Length: 293
Image 1 (tube, rainbow, N blue to C red):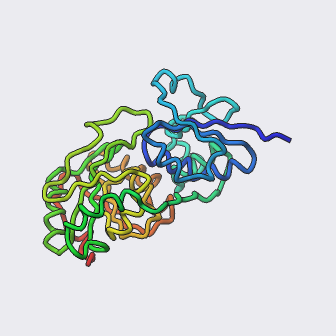
Image 2: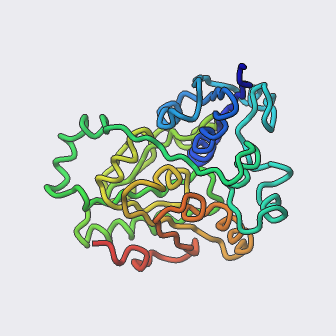
């Protein structure tokens, strides 16, 4: 008996891809799964080989996306949860208080309680190609490097640039090598913001690491300090010390509290990471990384 075919079109940011790709292996038990992603996200999608029977890479337009269905069907559906049954946050409040956005995706896919499958990292070819440049950082950079990831496409509030400059200066003074992830290509079908490469935090070394390589790279660095973004979803299970900063505007505290409950990296993935609220107007406080050695 032939399995039903289900076709999912991934779009939006890294975190959305990680959630959907991480839950689709459970759908494959009952259906043949086809996944379409944008060219910029192919490397990420291939980290999840058990999430689909067929992977298609297409550069769809906004009009193509607007024509897609919301919800499982035998036609192409958009892999989107933000507006599920009106609003993901409202759905959680009505049906699963204390749940996370992963529970919304589970409801859409009909896989309640399913575990989120992690990425399958391969040996870092990017690292091998760049080893000559890296050797100039310092002799003992492995395990003593902090990867800064200050950029978040969908975050409503950002920490000021000076916060990141001060954090880099503090960590450098403690003997760490500090690098900035400047890659800016992880946005599905959305338009890139600011070009493919962003400027590094002053005083740090810029690194443009492909999404398919970022896990091994972060593990060899040893430490990650990042804004809450899709990158923190992708690195949730990496063997590294990660602190995730949640910038908050006190005038929107109630909204941010709900957002944190739904999107906490620790709660979604059961990850051993530190998550901290930071007022957007506050200066850098070393408390969040004070025990890093």
